[in-house]
Image (cartoon, rainbow, N blue to C red; front, side, top):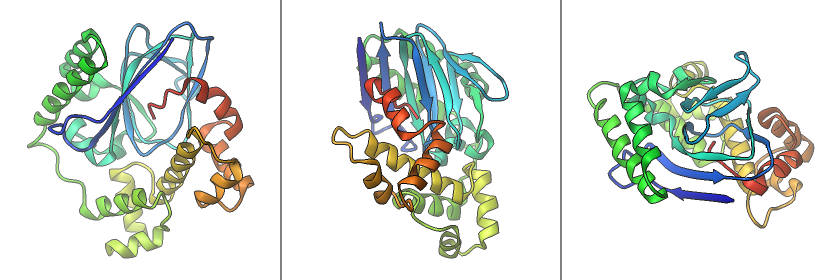
Length: 271
């Protein structure tokens, strides 16, 4: 069985929460999922069984509810052919309001949701897990995340407007802006922008642009009418197909061909 659901949050939910993605797989062969880089912090609520990740400095880890900061390497998730949960995409500019700290503080890490939301994390998890059907689960997320954000309305400062402007331009161009041009646009030196950007977002503007190009390529490869690798490379600003394959392998931990074989038959794109 394969089941998925995808929905934008209710209008009352703060706009930095981009999308909910629910998934359920049952009876499939054991395999792996590549948790690849993207523009979002993702927090996961896993039902029935924990998410098991391998590799990295901490070895094998099992988690039920957690947040992953922005990263530029892939996480390897192993499964027994059964997966069931919800992924919530959060923009870096919303980390302060939802979690009480900038996205830069979570870069390259995975943190238990309870460390960030306290007892509210358990309440949120229990309400979503107990809900019947995706509509009810997403409604429980709407309510829980509005409450979590409301608790912090008077606490976190706003992200620097220059960083917000630089981030939005990078996203709008799919990573197609050089760091020097971004710095000139916001009126800062390149070095100052890099320092402030990393503190707020996590990666530097250069690395963020690299991730955004990769994300666009991943979107194209996921389309039903998937273009060839050379066409994807040209569309996303890579020098050639060899450059694209090299960059993809460094970010995803495997070649584009391997990723297509592993992911597309049972795509669970929670990243």
